[in-house]
Structures are given as C-alpha cells and as structure tokens.
Image: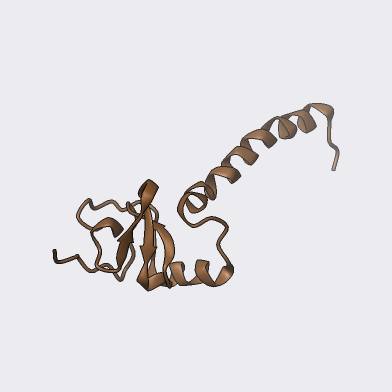
Length: 98
C-alpha cells in the first residue's frame, strides 16, 4: 500500500474528532454512574437501561424503584442501589403510587 503525506494528514486531522466523540460516549455514564464495573454495565444492559427516556411519563424519577438524589441522579433498587439519571428508564419501570 502506497501512502502519501496528504493521506496521512487527512487521517491525522480526523483524530481530534474521534477522541471528542469517544469522550462523549461515556459522558452520561460518568455523570451519574461514574466509572462502572463490568457487572453493573451488564445489569444495566440486561434491564434495557437508557440515560434519556423518550416518554416523559416513563422516567426513573417517576419509578417506584428510584430514590431521588441531588444533581438529577438517584439510587435504583433494581441496580443494587447504583446511581442512575432521573431522566433515564429501563424495562423494569413501575410508576410510583404517591
């Protein structure tokens, strides 16, 4: 394969963009969950947890298993008390009866 300086510069120019996008992938996770262990990542995946619900009525902040905290995060009983976003949702959502 013959590479030129021009092709190298084109690829090198995209590197900062790739690093920026990679950093954003974990941004929501870092906000409420921090650096999660693999077991917690697996549990979230098994429950279908997402950081941002598309349905305003189905959000962790309205769930029986959620205990609110500061900064939009709280503890989830389904995730062994791990921190989650109040705006998130999972497949185990049960509306809180106040």
